[in-house]
Image 1 (cartoon, one colour):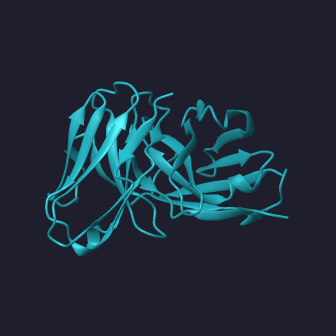
Image 2: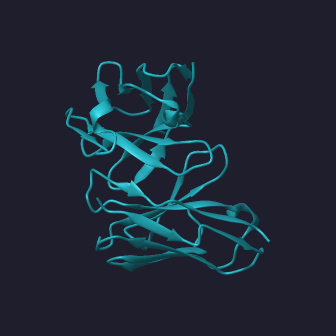
Length: 117
Length: 108
């Protein structure tokens, strides 16, 4: 059974870079036909797609966040990562990683990242 | 960018009620729509894909319909475990996609 697990700091200072990693187990991140994505959810609010990476390394980002987002993949570790720069309090959210095609079937449990000094 | 709206934003219903949630796209998206259920503290769970296809393991009381710009999620007989927030997601511009703002279903 494929599982995804987010990890990274739970507290980030304003203007710094948020960095998260998603570790995939029970399957290979190099599987063709799947994208690996990041979605976030501010407390009490809705879902926002951040961006996704294909196993080949092609990346796709939400236009509203594109200037601050980098997603990368490390196939040797079966992981993919998110970097979000110049964070503000508005970036406080639960961050989910997920495997997807057109729809998202496999999700991580999510990790809360708070932006505060 | 394609925007999604959902109505209502929240509703109160009783066990056994028939519940209908609407999702409207800002432009036609064919059948490129999915529905998710999210309970507090949990990741969303896929219910419906391609507007009307039931995900494996999802109870048959859930159904989806629509195409183009107007879509509905129907729960034929609301059960206690169905109280949650429901989101639509469009993938017409896949691999880019967007979510609707959500509809919270709570107990009347």
